[in-house]
Amino acid sequence: MGKKTATDGSQLGEKTLPNSDPARRPLKVLAVDSGKVARKWIISEFKDQGFQISEASDLQEAARLAFMEKFEVITVGLYFREGTGFDLCNSIRKDRINGKPFASSDAKILFITSEYNDSNRIKAHDAGADGFLEKKPDLTPLKETLQLIIKDLKSEIPGTEDRHTKDASRLKSVLMVDDSELNLVLSKRLLESKGLKVQTAISGEHALRILLEEPEKYEALLTDMYMPGMNGDCLCARVMQESKFSGLKLAIITASNELDSETDKIPSNVKILVKPFDADEIVDFVSAD
Image 1 (spheres, rainbow, N blue to C red):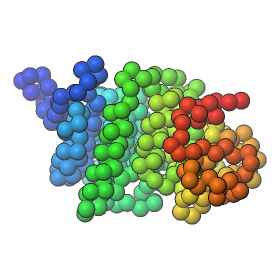
Image 2: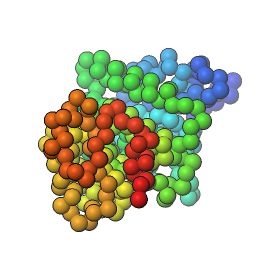
Image 3: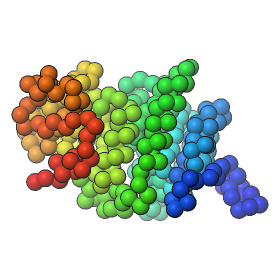
Image 4: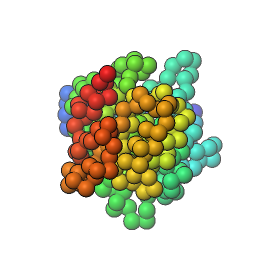
């Protein structure tokens, strides 16, 4: 069912908020959750930040809105009567209707749910999500994480060319590995703004599975050093054992205060990037012959 139109021409259910920068249109957010309370809370986090907000309580309406309108951010719950948030994420990223992709195919998609575990996180990132955020009874950590993401989104320079305007078949693809959801969200946004295509993984084991499924898809692997299970140096060593990955560029991202203790662990042909990393340095690294 289509949205009703208010007398002033705006759509009911959409809250248009003032924008602090008149030279730039407000960033648009779509809050998708089957629970009214959950949607209300998410909307409250964006409402004073100059965002234009729409909401949907079911997957069909969410898909319709995401196909018709370009949203910068889509927040998604996990379970709906018609399916899961993974289904919606996959559709937005991959489906076409009458040959046309979703207008929001490049939106930042953030899962917000109490069902936080590695299995669900992996499914979300495999579906193309940017992040999987945990909603605990104490909402303070989630509020702080969302505020950091909002600040990062608003800091992007207006008019900066993004990957949406480029031929997707010619983009350099990188696999970014980090156990921190916040790091994945912020790093992916930054690298995509520089013209790279980024797939995210939450662990070394997850990254290996992705690489083995499509060994020729990625130009570079960028991994955090310390992660549960398999550290970045072990991941790189494992990748180097496979001849099918011989052309894959490898880089480990680490904090400057950890360099002295880590240098001996990292193979000599693996590039070391120091946090906070320089996005242009990564672009040069990925693009180098």
